[in-house]
Image (cartoon, rainbow, N blue to C red; front, side, top):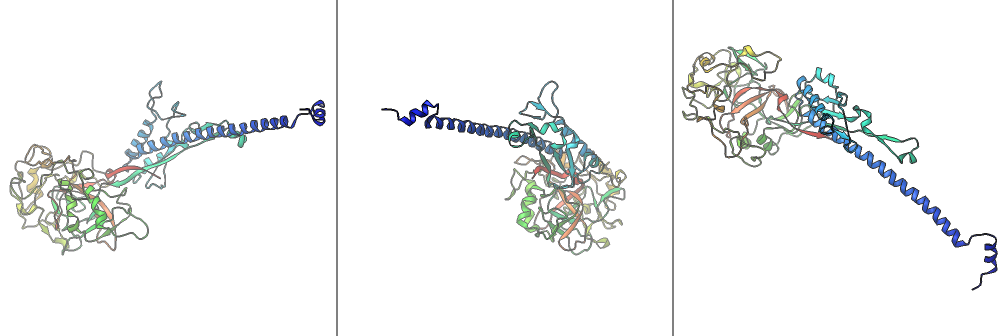
Length: 492
């Protein structure tokens, strides 16, 4: 083959052939493509660092919020413990990175500041600083942690390639928030009327709370402070929080059943607004679910979510079941009374019934003893160790006329806690102490319509199984709503 004259002249003149020029163009395009590819790789690296730091901040916010929220109980002490628990999450062993909250792939540790946490009455706030919350802690059951309140360095990521697409943006910052708090309370969706409006008063020296006296058994279905014809009871909606705006569905038997099994309602508190209620309480359809506490389980109750009590002994009307009563009671609860236009018991009226006998007072003190009114201070919570109590030798004055007497009463504790005597029966399934105590909302009566206000939460110890007509409970005092919170979770 011979070279054409044109090609020879181009080569002689120093020109490149078309193939060489094409190879040069491909090289330039390849280099440009490499720059773009490296740029995307670099951007992906920066974004992955930001994502990882975001996850580190979120894990920090979540764990601290949960640790703090579990301590909140509506008191200044709860706020203090919440702050302590939050700080403990950041504690690092000296000279190590062990035990503390870390970031940057666990190579650095953080330090806590109370500026990163706020407290509120609902998952949506309004939020108060730690200082404000300590001064007014009532109702603050939720904690919000924002890592933006920590040192800004913790959320800062130095970038390499973002600067290419965003000039002068050589670092980026991220933070995370978390809200944690209660979503259930240990109270049954069964309400009765408070028999008196006073949270506490003296009844012949005996402490009376909302019209109830400790150590006395009441038939909770036969109480009414406004009429004598029949008891007034209520089914509560267990999933609609107090004060919820707008129309709410009426309480439903099937919905209420599992909540009666567990003794809880799906809300942080039952006060602070009106609950949705329906009267009367349909005990005939729901009584069996109360008896999970005696190791009698009917679906949806089960031993996992509704375990029995550790002591399922029933205190019936015989010498074997009530060995501490010298005179056997005439009934499983205190005798009824219609004095003062109320349906209650003989221990209610201030004017003592002259026809009362020793057998009229029902079983006494199987779980709780009468408390001294002199130990009660209006507006102050019950001491952690409880109020000072009377002894069985005081029955002749506390329950006079009638004057019931005790015999073989445990030297310490009460029959319920005397686990080595005939007062104790162990369940077949693993039990939980105090499961027989029903935390019952005490409503302000009369109730108009389908909304009711809760004045307090009464503790009633089930002395025997519920039946289609009665729930018998020995009054054991008023529960602090703050102490009944359960089941902490993170909120969106």
